[in-house]
Image (cartoon, rainbow, N blue to C red; front, top):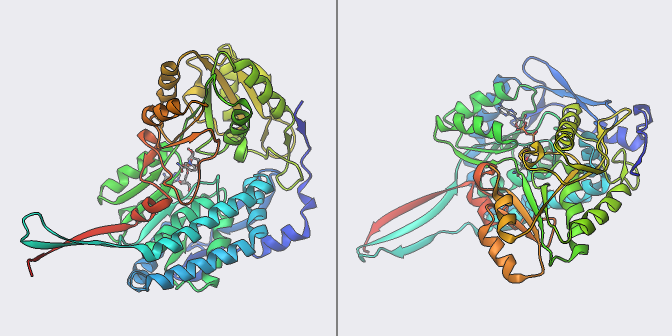
Length: 499
Ligand code: NAD
């Protein structure tokens, strides 16, 4: 059976936790100044492992959002004309300092989001890498010069910062989702307004304070945490001074924001939901497939856009795969992310627990078999037992919806065509995973799977140097890699006559 540790009461917060929380800014950052919300309102940020309030922070008003855009607009020329090397060095200092303070950032993420501390440390490494990668890209923004085909003119193509950008982030990767947007924007020479998720704003607040500390000029990065997301973002998106919207979050909210952005024909990047297929072929290395499955499913307690949502396993190997996976899941320890050896932290809130349980119940009602888990965990905090289901039947809701919890759901297939058709049978197209020892099959899958990314014999695809993003209703644009900085650059072409 899965080991469930009772979460300790809030009163046992350690000195290190208290001291760290005391250092987190609790205001809005507008034009380099930490300040309260215009109407003085605050909101509570809660530890999902205990239900305890960690901090009360300023709750930005629509007026604050517009003031933040005023500041980004005022700072835009200065930042755009700052030499790329200078921008790069500043970002590199931020990377070094972030890694120096790795333990602080990891602990803060675990406190506000719940992920196990070891994973939070991994997120500092991953999130930090965007600062290093894009500091290196900042000095490589090139262009081209060429003779036109008629030989009558010279074409110069150059790139310049798109202008003030509005960055909206989700709660599940509090640091990496912020750095994945802020770093390419800064490298490109854009100023920004950041609206972090209201469930996990603390990491962003501590991070932008670090940017201030390394010398980022006032107004280049502004932050407006708020519980009034639609009210604050509406006027910012409608403002003609804004030139770019980058959003990571759910597909329904992404659609709404795209409609708003259309009014000003705003440049957008949309990193939306996923419904990743995880294919295990009969020729797969099962040791590798099991490791990949655990990483792709249970990282972040299943709360990742890249989380494997549908396991499609060849009927010849399904019994062995399910047996091995179930044994590993039963050995997982559930508990507070700060405790040693915990693999499964809390879900973000009650709604997430209810959703996971509703999807599991629906699958069982339709004929799935429960191998382990399948229930919420009692006590303080919002925990769900890690779950394995086999014989999941077509039509089950969890094959269509993002589970966003620690539930591994297995179906079988017989032929490659059947597997590919099932994998593509979704409105989403963020990432897929496939395990096969046949290189030709791997090649065919690269061509046939309708996803923006593919993990071939690996359960983790994220890397700062690679273009992360989806097709279909998983979004538009890419973050990371050379493509990541292009999202914040405008292309200009100048024609001059034959000299
Ligand atoms: P969400 O869409 O509820 O919220 C995301 C952000 O949008 C938050 O900051 C929220 O405050 C804000 N928001 C919500 N409604 C808004 C509105 N009407 N106007 C303006 N802003 C609004 O998503 P979430 O629950 O925070 O995150 C989970 C979702 O994010 C999942 O669907 C997941 O797949 C997706 N996600 C995608 C990626 C990716 O890279 N593709 C990465 C992480 C998460």
